[in-house]
Image (cartoon, rainbow, N blue to C red; front, side):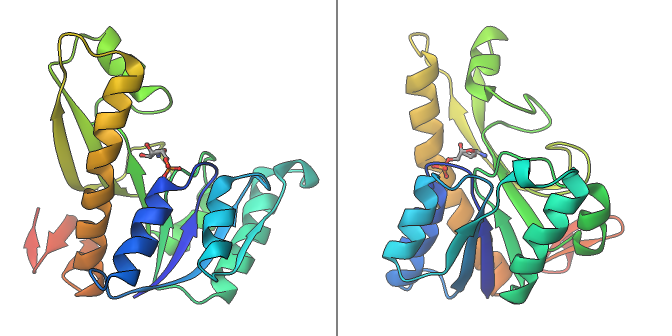
Amino acid sequence: LRLAVLASGRGSNLQAILDAIASRRLHAEVTGVFSDRAAAPALQRARDAGIPAGSLSPRAFDTRAAFDHALFAAVDASAPDLIVCAGYMRLLDAATLAPRIGRVINIHPSLLPAFKGLHTHRQALAAGAAEHGASLHFVTAELDGGPVIAQVRVPVDADDDEARLAARVLAREHPLLIATLRLFADRRIALREDGVHVDGRAL
Ligand code: GRF
């Protein structure tokens, strides 16, 4: 399975992918890491693993469409089977995304459809949620709104603060991501007209 990874920041999910590949828990190859931030630590993690990594500055482009066109030209040149948004903080241009729907996934730190967007841990605490977690989903033009593939649930503790809850969810995101990528590597997953299918069955 050839994976292109889009990342804007820390890159712990990217690192989980690299570690799983290195320890043969995931039969895949990262074809490139692409960012909208030159300073993203994810880029250094990629380079340390000998993986091509680069960034484009959104400020150098007039429109979102122009930026995404350039970004995806680079992504496509690495010939991935699947594009993984792992802490990629920009919306994708709808027209750029359209021909790629079903080949782009995102990890989001909430139990979607609850708490889309930013500051999900803060949102969960403010809502008094008893349960929080993370979701893997196919990316569509709707922010954090595409079909969900898999989720992990994390109970909220009475004395949780944002940082503590975020850390507990993050620790569960990494195995969720790897388990989901294994489904793709084994070709057990597909997005069809009527939703996500695993082993030929609708989720
Ligand atoms: C993760 O919480 C991910 O779910 C969200 O952004 C964060 C990225 O973390 N989309 P990292 O850069 O992978 O460490």
